[in-house]
Image (cartoon, helix red, strand yellow):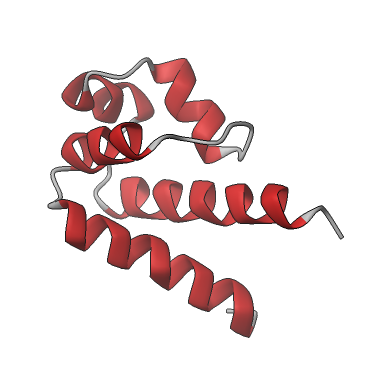
Length: 85
């Protein structure tokens, strides 16, 4: 089992990917809309980095979501990981 911080990054990344795919957006489109690099977004989705709050809010903007809605989506990813769903 990966260390807790890595597992948490993986869950956040999976949640971001799911929300992006649910909106049929490319990484490039989300990155452009959120004023982020597309490589950064790819690393985030793969759980390769620990994002700062302002970066997560930029991702929410790129997804066309309010921050509260975005963080609910991230919380849903944690709930799914805990229940195996």
